[in-house]
Image 1: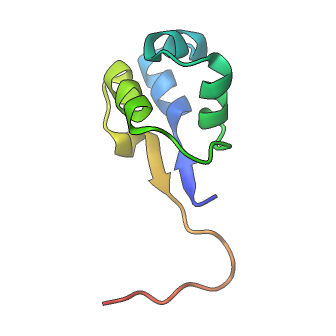
Image 2: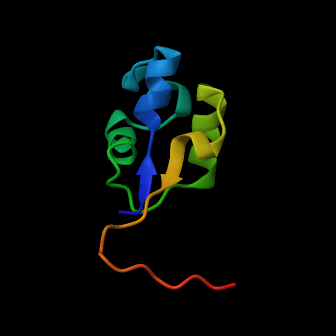
Image 3: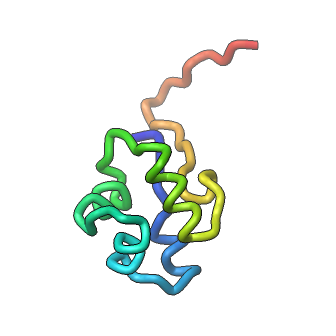
Length: 78
């Protein structure tokens, strides 16, 4: 998937466990694991905002775009 999730990086920087983050955000540890491992198909803005509030970060510190390695690049529009 071209969107990478860097929650692990922020957890390490904040010295916080997955369980603690899940409790403070108000989601289950299982749902946080799905998001953290890049298996989520979507994330609610409310959840993203709560993650940013608890981790004291910006959305761009949790999510980043990576080009898929298909061998071909889509043309860019001007």
